[in-house]
Image (tube, rainbow, N blue to C red):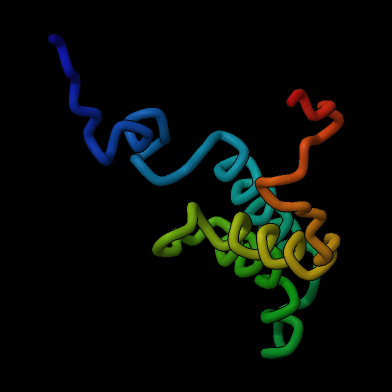
Length: 105
């Protein structure tokens, strides 16, 4: 009998740097690009304007940050939103309901 053991980090080899998907890196690069553009366009003599200019990079960095037991913050937040927005009434009839089958005795 051939039995193969799948290592726990088998999926990590498919990720960039073992942490990020292509979408994560594209999202983060868009955030960095938007921040750089805002730093060039906005006058950053004040702290508040500098924080506003850096906000896209900080938000996208937060979204792609790895989290234990989840892939990253983006998947954690999407799971939480799906949990709170979707139906909570479970339609379970039990194991003894025939599900359309007629009783044959």
